[in-house]
Amino acid sequence: MTAWYNSLVRWLKANFKNSCVSASDFKPEVGSREHRVWVGPHAIERSRRGCKLKQSGPLEFSLHYFDPADEDQVLARYREPKNLLLVGRVTHAGEVVDPTLRKQVFRVEMENGAPLPSFEGPFMSSHPEPKPGDEVACVFNENILGRHPEPWESRELKRLPPKNRERILQGLRKTWRL
Image 1 (cartoon, rainbow, N blue to C red):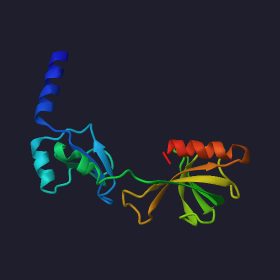
Image 2 (cartoon, rainbow, N blue to C red; image 1 turned 90 degrees about the vertical axis):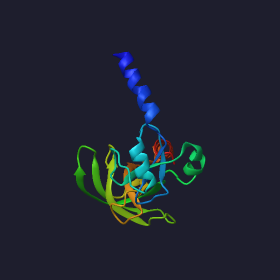
Image 3 (cartoon, rainbow, N blue to C red; image 1 turned 180 degrees about the vertical axis):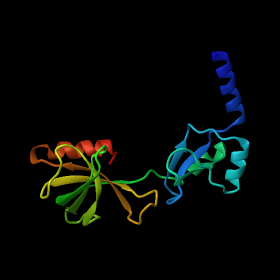
């Protein structure tokens, strides 16, 4: 069985290529090298003609084949999605939209000078749940799917008690690579 599997792997690597970038259709400059996908000659030809190759994952992302000799030039055209960490105060805690993911609608007024003066939308929140008046840290991801017109997507909201404020902010920066 092992010999048969290894022969299949050798055949795939001899006949298929794994020189692809997975990039957003909504923001084509956002993408990254995809090492786990191998494409055959017909898919490579279609990609060169401008067809979008799709894989499992967000429908708004496509694979783009590139010649391995041009890898550095190609990868220089892409960037990682941006994340944003803002601090503000909860002005309204609304309905729970997903109990499994602990997503709830919150309205947050951000600190002065923040790129978003206020935001209302669903955030994942951890226990203890923030209440109106609580200082919170809000994590946002750049909208790279284009499912709504806003430039940012809400991700996580954490209450900032005064004694753990800096530790929580540092943890969020590390988790979300900010």
